[in-house]
Length: 218
Image (cartoon, rainbow, N blue to C red; front, side):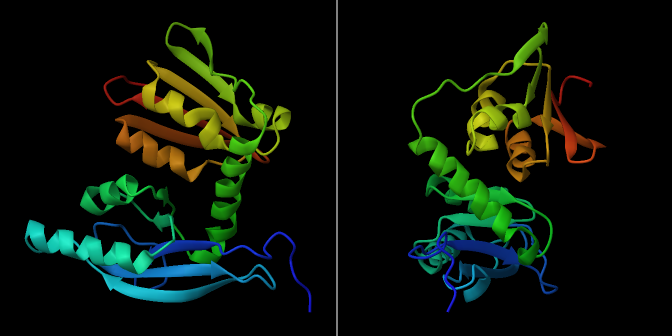
């Protein structure tokens, strides 16, 4: 029987909150939390457990009890996907060390991409020390960076590793990001840090993402 060397010996799990149609749901809305595990034989994803979940009603004590029950259900899984992430559940996930993704769609469409990005970040962390290029200031407080170019020079480095710290701490009025796809985490971080996030396809396999503070017109 064929066994994928990349999957063998690993137990990869991703939790997703879904609506009744099987699409990702918002963390603030009732849904079904399903934990998917990657099959070690053929790299396919299978649901291994699921739990109905709703934390949008009840007293503060009741909401905390629901979140505690969710954490027990998730067990060792530390990757969570939702259509939109905010509120008490989101902050509890972050506090507990989860990697939270914001994606719209069905799990079959994005699970491979999520785990690849997660593994790229781990590999980059285990690689020899290198200096990650920072966005280039092309005019006062206006920056640009090409994720594609950086990843071409440093294979395996994740988009988060390249850019997340700058987005969360940088003092800029405009940041242009060139990439081959729009990293889902960027939109979530933009919301968390009070930024506008606009994206457009500029060519085959080319996207431009523009981040600006909400108080500053782009």
